[in-house]
Image (tube, rainbow, N blue to C red; front, side):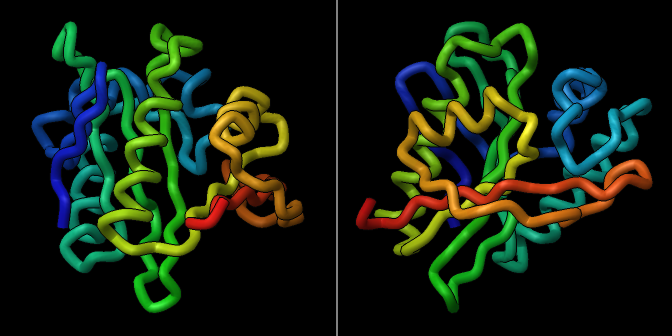
Length: 176
C-alpha cells in the first residue's frame, strides 16, 4: 500500500503519531472541524487517538490517511485520504481538511487530484465518493471543480454532537 504521494507543491505521507501536534492545531480550530464528523479537539491526545485509529484501519486495508505537507515550508497544512476502502466493490470514500490559513490557495484541489489519480490508476478503483454537509459550500465547490457528480442527500445520516445531520453524496467514476 502506498505511503507517499507527491504533487507540485505538496508531499502527502501516511499520517504518523509524530504529526499529532500539527494535526491537533488544525483539528482544534472550530472553523476547520465545523463540517467534520468529529467535535473540535480540545487536547492533543485526541489527535493521537485519531491517528492510531486511522493507522489500525490502514493496516487492515480499510482506510489510509495522509498528512498534507507544504513542500516550501515543510509544514503540515492538513490531512486527506481514503476514509473507507472497499476493494471488492472497487470504491472508496475520501475525506480532507486544510488549516484555515491555507484555504483558497488550491492545496485541497491539488491533494485530492493526487488521491484520485492514485485511486484510479494504482488501486484500480472504479468509484470515489465524498459525503459533504450541504452547508459546506467550499467543499461542494471543490468537488464540482474536480468534476464530481451530485447524487443526492442522505437525510439525517449521521449524528454529531447529539444532532442528526444531512449529508450530500458526490461521486466520481473512473470514466468521468
